[in-house]
Structures are given as C-alpha cells and as structure tokens.
Image (tube, rainbow, N blue to C red; front, side, top):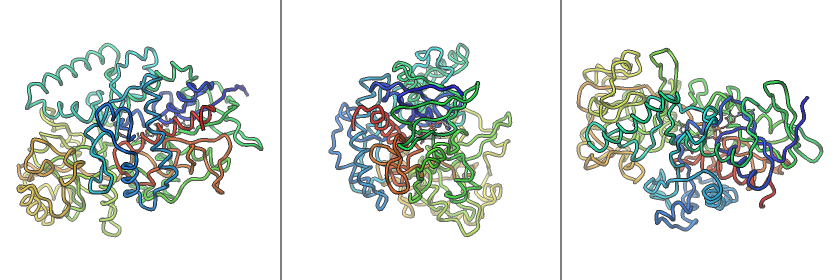
Length: 561
Ligand SMILES: Cc1cc2nc3c(=O)[nH]c(=O)nc-3n(C[C@H](O)[C@H](O)[C@H](O)COP(=O)(O)OP(=O)(O)OC[C@H]3O[C@@H](n4cnc5c(N)ncnc54)[C@H](O)[C@@H]3O)c2cc1C
C-alpha cells in the first residue's frame, strides 16, 4: 500500500472540512483534504449559504453592536435542557474570530444579514438582524480549472441552473413583472447567466452555498491544501496513544496517510444512511433528505470504530424541512425544499382532514415538527400547501415559478393539483372537502382583517420578513379566494442530521467515558449540533460548521488552545 504523511488529514470537503483545512494550513500544517465525491462542496454547495454567527465585525460594519450575552440568552431560551453552556460559549466566542480570520486571511468575504431576525422573536434575547452573514457573490471564473471541481447547485432551488439569493436578489425576481427596475435587474442577471451557460457550460455568478464553497476552495488552493476528490476515507488507523491517520481509497488503490497532528472528520453526518435513520428518525420510510448522496454516515462509523460516540439525546435528530417530490420532464426525480413560499400571504398548510395545524410562516423545522405532532395515529406523514391563482402567479409554489413562467407542465406531471373550486381541489388531492371549505372560510374572514387568531402569523419580525411588504395590513396574510385553486403535497424532509458525534469545546471527539479520543476531531454535521436539536435561526448549521471547523483546524495545527 502507498504510504504518505501530512500534519492534518481532513475527511470531507464541505463547509466544515474546507474551513478546517484552510485554517490548519494557515497555522502552518501540511494538510490533505480527502473527499469521497468527484466534486467539492457536499451539501454546503447546495445550501442557502446563510451562516448564523452573532457579534461579528461584519455586523459592526452595519452598526449592529450587541453584547454576546444577548444571543446567549436567546439560545438558552430556545434550547432549554439542550443548552450545553460550555459548547455554546465556545461557539459564541470563536464565531467572531472565525469570521475575522477568513475575511482577513483568505478569499472569503461576507455580506451581512442586517435585517434577518431570529426565528422566535417572542423569546428573550431574540435578535432582529446582524447575527447572520453570507459569502459575497463570487465570479466562478476566478477558480480557473478548479471550477470543474465545484459541485453544481441543486437544480430544484436554482432557476435554469442560476442560484438566486434570498433578500433583494430574490425580491427582484418576484417583482419582475411589476417593477421596471426589477425587470431590468433580472434581464441583466439572466443575460449574463445565458452567456455563461453558452461559454462555460454552467452559471458563473455564484451565490449562496455555491459562493461559500467556491471561496473556500480558492482559499484552500491558495493555502497549499492537498485536495483529493474521489478519495473516500475508509478506516482510521490508531496506536496506543490515539488516532494516527487513515486509509483512503484512491483511483489507483488504497493509500495510507499518517497524520502527525490529527484527523478532522467532516463527512456530512448520516442523512443518507438508512440504518441510522431507521434508528433515530420519526417516520424514516417517508423521509426525503435534501443532502448529497455521499452523506452516508461515514464520519460517525469511522469515529465509532476508534471509540467515539454518537449523541442520542437531541431534541430532534435532524434539521427538518418540508419538501415536495418533483419529477422533471425528462423523468429525473428531485426534492424541493419549501423554505420561502410557506411564509408568503395567501397560502396555508392543511392535513388530509382539511384543517390547518401550524403557523406556516414560522421555521421549516417547526412546520415538520408540528405536522408530525398533529397527524392522527397511523396517518401517512404529509400535508398540503393550498393557495389560489393570485398567490401562485405572484410568488410561485414549490418548484412552480411565478409569472410569466408557465405552470402547465407541473399540472400535467401531477406535481401541482388544481381545482376550479376549493371542493374540486380537495377532491383532486384526497382532502376532506368540507374540512377544507370550513378552514378557508374561517382563514379568509380573519386574513382580510390581517389577523390569524389560530396561529398568529405575522406577529414577529421573522414572520414579517418572510411575508410581502406590499401587502397590508399584515404582510403574512391574504385571503385565498381567486379561482382556480392549487395545492402541492409536502412530506417530511431534512437539510441534514443534527445527531452527530459527541465533542468537547475544542471539537475533539469524545469517547463513551466523555474523554477526548486523542488525535480525532469532528465538525459540521459529523459533530452533534451545538443547538441541541433545536433550530433557533436560519444558518445554525453552517455557523457552527465553519466555526468548529476553524476551531478544530487551529487546534490540530497547534495554533492555539
Ligand atoms: C437546500 C438546502 C439549503 C440549506 N441552507 C442552509 C443555510 O442557508 N444555512 C445553514 O446553516 N444550513 C443550510 N443547509 C444545511 C447545510 O447545508 C448543512 O448542514 C451543511 O452543509 C453541512 O456541512 P458539512 O460540511 O458538515 O457537510 P457537507 O457539506 O455535506 O460535506 C461533507 C462532505 O464529506 C464528503 N464525504 C462523505 N463521506 C466521506 C468519506 N468517507 N471520505 C471523504 N469524504 C466524505 C461528502 O461527499 C461531502 O462532500 C441547507 C441545506 C440544503 C440541502
């Protein structure tokens, strides 16, 4: 077997692995980054790219200065028994350092989510903006030949392969038929995109998770990281003192890597591991994850073989998101995450009895949790998002885009159900028609007044941001009354898993006695979520992934304790 040596071996090239590799290299380590897929980026490259990291210099630049005790108070309120003070404090302390490090020493630059509030605005310490950042858009041409290594965006969330960023970018697309400046902006974006497609065979105006990964990939190259796509790590090696390295499967056979300073696991958790999901997920057979197929729990299995332990006490095993199942015209199947449409005015979620069960405009995680709680015993886990024609053409629903993009193909494929009346729609979906009629009557009566006494939509800054500022008196509420009516079927899905390996404040993997396994770290979804299985804000996956990747890389390289 071929034998090679480095200081730090990183397993998996998503956000966490890239962050760890770049950091370790900057702190003087020789780094090998082993990636199972032929492309770089993992689920991170498909993500919205929002990164929850309070109290950073990026927020300060926008005039948002708050004491770290405020986000801490908020996390304490949301996480309850899952609040692990040591790890939360380690995260909150290191997050601003991580942001400074990447902005000053690498190709990563951030924009501020200055107006993005935390999800539960009624809890103490909830932020109203400035706690999240996103990688600035990136011109893919700056990657040179490495652009071929970048995982392409998820087709379901892109438009003709182009990533659209939540915020002003998305708003321009949603208002392009009603505003001249939006139409001009969209024409310019589309024109450039079509040119890139013709010239490079892919979009080059990178945004969201694709921009984050591209910037990290560029930073890894600049820092001299030895990046090895198509090199799955198969097992760890160890001696009496701890982990010593790993065996990778290369295209021409196995390679044994001796890692003098440590191995960092960042293989993306277990959303694609059927056995682990059966053991920990509610309704595993009905669950549709959005994560990349390579996320099969390898990091957990590698760690368990040397004494590491998985956390099993989280409030939820995964970061839930309601999804719909898409069949593209060419027969390809996909999964669409309902992140944005649920919060717009004029849509409701109902179960098969036609009744609402939650505040549709709260978080995606909450929607799935509430749906599973509300299901009658033995019922299939699913719900319907119901809207009218006005809503569909203004905002789109799931994969169905707003006007002027045609809706016909989605009706034909069966993805979008429709009916001239609520009763006809209910019959097409198999929803109880009387239940849906009653629900709509009640909902519409209150929605016209901007009220939602049942679930209180529009009562926090988070909900209002998801709404439509042009709708009054409540940006989250409008009656559903303009025929024809439409519905899309939602099932439980996830962005990835929360229930990773137990680690300490330095991201070191812990054994069953709570002691660090020497030489072994975990970050990203391979690490048990510091949020305890809760979802306090958008970006709570990537924030800790980058931060603990940074912490692990720095510690493994010997840069700082
Ligand atoms: C549509 C969508 C939107 C999202 N939006 C957000 C958002 O805005 N903010 C947020 O915080 N989170 C978001 N998420 C969740 C977030 O993307 C993930 O939690 C995060 O990317 C996980 O990062 P990671 O580095 O742990 O794993 P990944 O990015 O999945 O990387 C893991 C890598 O490890 C590789 N690998 C696996 N096994 C091996 C092995 N044996 N050897 C070597 N390599 C291996 C995989 O191929 C993969 O490339 C979103 C997810 C989706 C799907």
